[in-house]
Image 1 (cartoon, rainbow, N blue to C red):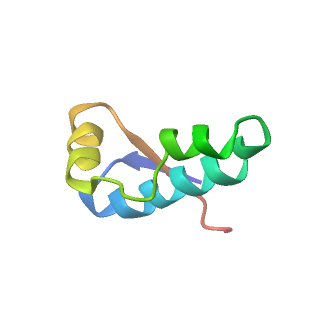
Image 2 (cartoon, rainbow, N blue to C red):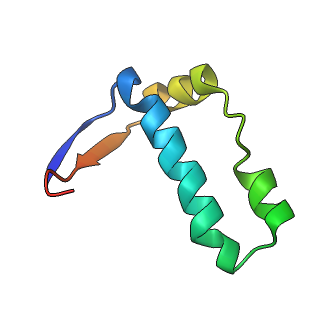
Amino acid sequence: MILREYKSADCAQLAQLFYETVHTINILDYSPDQVDAWAHKEIDLPKLDASFRAHKTIVAIDKKL
């Protein structure tokens, strides 16, 4: 596994991972309305990218996957 600092090129893939996780895993504990409010399909990528860049964001890459 490789750990590295976030790059703007990671944003879309991380947004998709977040959306899929909330709507697949968290749907077991929350209603559809709750997960839609938490992670809706229309993600503001420039805003998310700015947030990732403003914080210490580490990306884990598993070459086995």
